[in-house]
Amino acid sequence: MPFMPLKFNLQKRVKLAQGLWMLYWLSVIMGILIFSLGIFFKIELRKRSEMMDNNESHLVPNLLILVGMLTCGINAFGGKVCHDSLDPMKFSKWKPMLKPYLLACCGFNVLLLLVALLCFLMQFAVYLTLAEGLKNGIKFYKDTDTPGRCFMKRTLDMTQIEFRCCGNNNFRDWFEVQWISNRYLDMSNDDVKDRVLSNVEGKFLMDSVPFSCCNPGSPRPCIQHHLTNNSAHYDYDHRTEELNIWTRGCREALFSYYSSMMNSIGALVILTIFLESADMAGLKYLSTALETMVDPENPECESEGWLLEKGVKETFSELLAKLKALGKTNQVEEGAAAEATT
View (cartoon, rainbow, N blue to C red):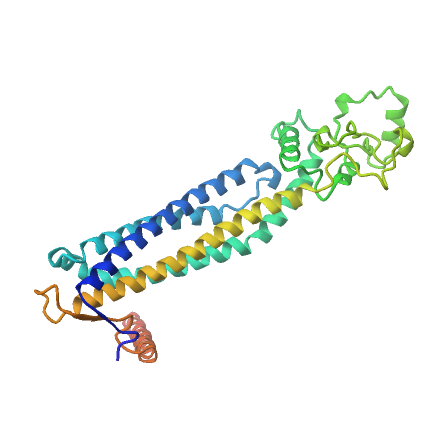
């Protein structure tokens, strides 16, 4: 007995074909959105590649671009089939392709599910890449004369301004590195000389941050130097006063940006899976309803459509039997090939 059978007349078949046509073209729009978001995500990763030490993975955006194009192609084909379904002459040329097409759609849904899972699971890899990349970026901030690192200062400054963040974990990360190049240090100055000599690694460390850490919304002029020295500033206590620099770390800010983007894309891909499933179910009903017409020459006659020709249990049993038979055939062929070689 067929699984979930429905009765159809001409009016219902026409409404089903029209509704499916609209659903298929809605899926094409979803494919365009996925394709566009894949390109946007790839551009955003490229734009901040230096912040990730050029180790960012482009697997997810590349897959999004691929599935976006496939979604457009597969659903445009389905829309064309639905458009021609009510014309017996036109539909007859599509009929042999429907079963392979529906199987391809099933496989494509599995691919979409994989892409959606990657959108959620790859966020951890992005987090680790950002942590390492920002750590190195802060270390190389001063190397404006070193080939390959000339623009690190500008990139990091623009990132801190755009995302309203400071440092890797927080602003104190700048206290642990020398972020001013030696060419801008007056080594004849006793204070500079003492600070360099007092450090084991010979670095000029200070409790200061770059200008890009300053919060322009603060009513007080930016205090970016001697942040932990209360006596260096009037009416100031760094332990109690709200600092007028960004206290949020750039790793947290950038990860929040990328993770929200990946979550949104993942949700869109899942929505596309539901749309694809609805398209497949509708097309199966439409094709079976057209095949079971009592009198094909009379469009007014009734017909029956279903999702599966047999029950779910019987269908899966047949599928397993076919897979087992295929496995045995492969084993026989391998045995025959082995005997032929000996």
